[in-house]
Length: 476
Image 1 (cartoon, rainbow, N blue to C red):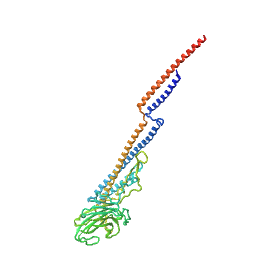
Image 2: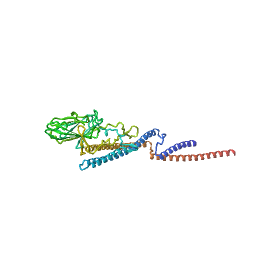
Image 3: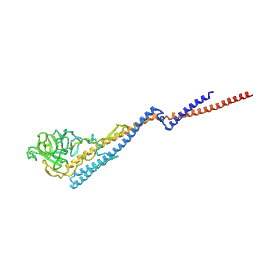
Image 4: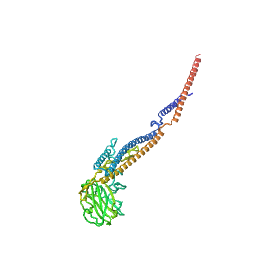
């Protein structure tokens, strides 16, 4: 009987069983099939690579949530700015009542000035983690605050639907009451500001401009020249601007006699200086225009335009970049425009009555009505409200985009986690079954060793007995 050979075989198998039993115990204790590279070299390497991507995606989800919180701060500040603008607009409307005394209007202007300061305070002090959000630092001017200069038609001194014209581009508008043809208007130059009173070629002064046909006479006398133009209409042109290039007063008023049925009027307006074709001192260039043929039926017609300086893209502005993809290069830019009063073009709005200047830059009196400056203020505040609404829409769209990015990253991280789980996680049922099997094999092996030990002991006794009996016979 090969006792030693059987014992060695059992011991070797028991060693293997013990190793398997230890592996199963480790697997059940950790829940992982792959605990080290030795368990599955290629699987371990794949799982670690995927795990690094999961960690990046999870961090991106956190970064996106932080960016969403930042945009909530921006939107809250813009909401306050919007409320302030609404209050300013209400004050402007209140100021346009004739029952207000000059002192009342001054008090209204004082409150408007304080509210404008509050807008600038919000613009300067809205921060997140030390970042000044509404100061313009993160304003690239792409599609929000960057606009070309141009002229927009306004209706009854309230901003009407319209748009900006590009450089030297005609704004074609049907002029009510001015015959049957369109009246092209061209804003001259590129909007480059010039020296006060002497704008260089290519510049113009933004202003509110109003055309009015005041009356008709069979012998219309031109107020500036004293010439009798015969049957004609008296046209008044009013321009209002706080620009110093307007001359001695912010409101320019000029009246011209225009013969009826004399064809379309094409000329340029400047102040002080009347129509540039009619002479006068060089002044602030306003815009070029063509008005259709005027007749007696046009008396009472009014049309108004507001021109604006362009806002170029901010060369020093940079987008606020947020990593939203879990790896280098996957970023989403956030553009946050400035909402200062300068950016909103309302820093110098006023509802106070102004002095008037004539064609020759001579002050012709103090106007008792504030309808023109208040109208200009209302138009610009309405435009500022539209701009803030547009900014809030963009901020909201960016917030939605970030939420979608965060949701996408969460789904990607979940799917990749499932992949790592498939590679590394243990099959608990199969592992428990194998663990039980190894325990049974261990018990069986130990029992076999015990039996072999008993068998070996018995065989040894027989051999010793046999050898003892033979020795006694030999002695006898």
